Image (cartoon, rainbow, N blue to C red; front, side):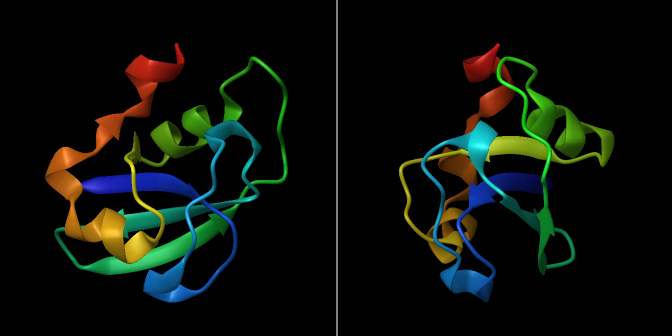
Length: 89
């Protein structure tokens, strides 16, 4: 599974999860099959366009969220994450 979630800054598993998906400047990318963790920057934000979600989808990454504050918590709770595609649209 490849997931993406908004983060505040680049700090490995200590990435702090951003409160608003559509306004985050960075997104955590995690590939559970390979155990790979990385971040990408998103400088483009347009209200109501779901641009960050579309950006992730184009890379084959599922936009996910949950009630967690760090990337490590997100990775440790993959099965309880919610799909942002259904929440935001």
